Image 1 (cartoon, rainbow, N blue to C red):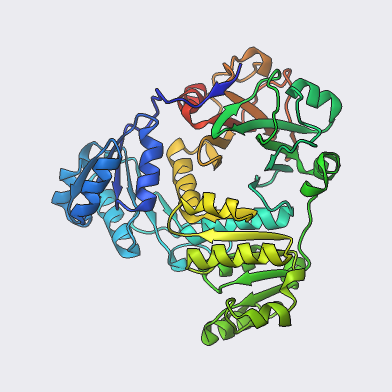
Image 2 (spheres, rainbow, N blue to C red; image 1 turned 30 degrees about the vertical axis):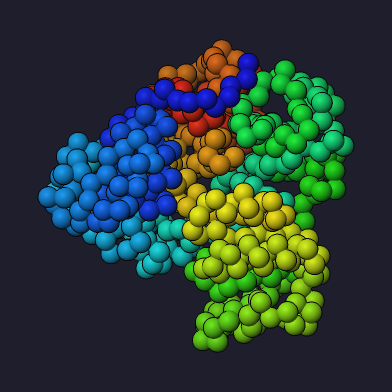
Amino acid sequence: MEFKRKGCNAILFLVNVLIIGAGRRGQRLARHLIEENKSVTFLDRDQSKCTATEAKLDCLAVCGMATDIEALEMAGVKSADAVISLTDSDEINLVSCGIVKSNFPNVKTTIAATRSISYISDEEGSANPILGISHIVNPDFEASERIVDIVESGLYNDTITFPDTSFLLFTMQVAASSPFMGKTLIECRKSIPGNYVITGILRNGEALIPSGRTIIKKNDTLAIIIDNDDTLSLLNKVGDTFKPKKPKKMILVGATGITRFLLKKLSPDIRKGIILTEIDKEVCEDFSRQFPDITVLNVSITDETIWEDEDFAKADVLVSLTDNDELNIISASYAKRIGVSRTISLIKTSTNYMQFARHLDIDAPISTTVTVVDSIVKQLRGKQVSTMHTLFDGDLEVYEYVIPKDFKYIGKALKDVDMKGRMLIAGVKRKNGSSFIPGGSYEFQSGDSLLFVTSHSSGHFFEGLIK
């Protein structure tokens, strides 16, 4: 059975959500929630944004100040299950959530976005306790986490790692010469042995959860979860294009907040081969002091001579991280055309640029909007969901779910639980640290962490399973 995304009749745990700030992040999050039949209300001080949002989405938008209790009440805060503040002001986001937490105890969850690093830990991204807010999300930190996964894996496409496991998720497009081409998943398992699961397929713009009888076609994009120990052996079989390669020479463009998080996370072996370009002299001096093992150049990436003088064309990867989306896309695309092996481009404003970037041969466009929404949705799914990521523009969702003691399927075998073709369990991590891809005889145990893969429109089935 194949399940294609055609709509949603979801009934999820949270019903009413108040989003403060009708910008790009708020609208993307709202679209995601509305597709799950959640009731979404916006509060924004800009009447034109409220009008435009109501025209685009099936929601209510109230014009008013987020720090005004009367405006919050007009926006329905008294009946809200969650309040999420996503304005461009850190202070408004924090204060509005603090006001909600203090005055409206019925609100179960408050989430605030903030760009200041003073509210989170540089190392782990966890929030410092403040105003009783449930969760603080930092766009720079979330985006840097995705880039670290891509660079450290050496795959340079949609790549996700899962903490404390050997699992790795990556995507690849099927070429005519691919050994997957024209085979069913059952045939792939027989002809391409290994510890992996094809968990999702993007075909003609639609995401589907495949069955064993699904036939893989040319230009399909496959989402594959694999035991990382087996990565090399599998990728050697599918072709040179997907062989992992950690960078020996890496160019970073722009010394921004994301760059700082990224440098702290990357391994010392990778950092020693990094060249950072930045046009601001004082910022260069600051990064040189903080990261003495990298090379910092006070130059503009638009200066053609720097490409020749530093032989950028021989770099393994270029990552463009400025605050200018257009410059990031142009820099990454140009780098690829002159010979840089792989390129990554940060996109901070319009998610529409994601498709443009891919058509310009950029290997991995990273959207801060997408990574922030992923982080927020994970929080809304409940405390048993420890990680959550989306692929295929949000159509495919991957969860790491920790089985509680009252899980209704404890002791049952996987083969005896009807997933109705809507989701897969692609990995299991045990409390003792071991991890494996489960077979039909796997029995659910309290404390196990499961990697669930499902289409967005089957979110109700996932939550019904874990409820």
